Length: 205
Image 1 (cartoon, rainbow, N blue to C red):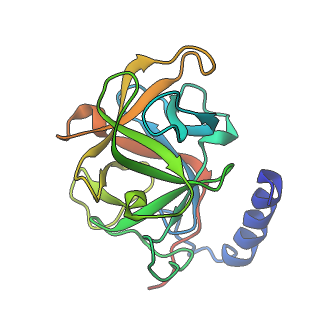
Image 2 (cartoon, one colour; image 1 turned 45 degrees about the horizontal axis):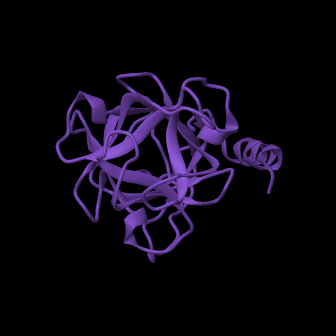
């Protein structure tokens, strides 16, 4: 399904689900397609069909400065080998999810390879395969559910490290894009906000 067709599909879903004045778009929900903004730098979590030249050699994940690039869309999915989550279901603080890159259909992934610029833990995109795709959502304020625009952290379940961006920038073929990696301890560089996207309204659970 092309990005245009996915937008069309979501529009139809919204028309069918959102006629009620009571439709609740306050929360980030399963199945929604969103962009994630790194709080410290303002760059969006991004991927593309460019592989790392070191480490795992898998599809690279970067921070991208512009807000209008479709390669920054991620779909919220259920954890690996768990039943499919229901579209519109809420995401609790501490819930485990996967983030599927819309354009390439691969999943945000991490492992023990070193990141190319800072030599931290590498973050990549990888076809569905193992628990390295699982991330825990942690709300910074401790709120019970993940709300739109709320600051959160993503903790890699297998290693316990936190998704981070930094000011290290790549050269060709992706000049100016920032490194994404995982680090051991949470700090101001490991916080993210949900931003642009297509959000399913909250189900009456």
